[in-house]
Length: 164
Image: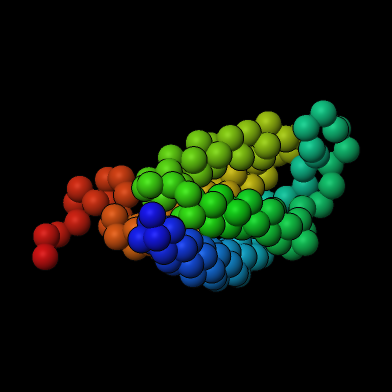
């Protein structure tokens, strides 16, 4: 009985440390994604993409500026970090669960930009921004979660990883 409670306490401490590490990786990946998305938005504007869109059910187009891009990445990073820390603490295979959760959420996030009022170029540019941010954040956090419990990379990356 004493051994079990000691083990549970030790596991809890390790999980808390892992959770902090996962949060750090998530926030750093989010910061990198934010920088890339801001550059992507600037390039799109320079290329003549209007970046004016209206929300779901709204018909008034507003300028999608740097503040909106930053806000979108920030919201995604916040909720992604919450999920990653929770999975690191409670999931048996946190990397696999994170990937299985975030990929459908990414697909769902594309509904907003693709159905918004605006030009096709704006819609595709905004959807591309979602994909770019996810391509930076999801793999970094998934890799960190894979190391959290020693499970390695999750999904197809593990199948094609060279043997040591």
